[in-house]
Amino acid sequence: MTDTTQPDDFRAQAIEWERGNRYEDFTIGRVFKHHWGRTITDADSILFTTLTLGYNPIYFNADYAQAHGHERLVVNPLLVFNTVFGLTVEDLSEGGGPFLGVDALTYPNRVYVGDTVYAESEVTAARETDSRPDYGIVTWHTVGRNQDGETIVDYTRTNLVRKRT
Image (cartoon, rainbow, N blue to C red):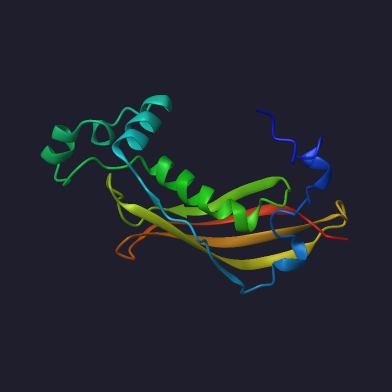
């Protein structure tokens, strides 16, 4: 049976929402507590390590990890970084603009399979650019923490960010 209550083209009725923040939204000192957390599973850790050709057995061999003083599998630090970075995208860069780089990346504490990671970012710099008048340059300091509040990754990140005007 066909539903005749639907318009022929529902897309014509859709309202497009602007996604992400723009340059004007990033005032120095503004803090974003990124609303999602992410629990790192065995599958996440082992698959990431395998796909990126990770060679350290503490990332994929539980016996080896325990024999070297770890309670369980250690999560590959690149997965930790990518997960925390991904948690920030909706607030910081979803509005579009080229990624310019990461600086001062540190991993103060290990992450273990089963840990949940959270992210928080603060705007540390924002400036206009003459070469791209429709963009500004924004830098954020991001801290990733585990479920116990321990810092697990810390870095600064810079992007070109699209302006509204």
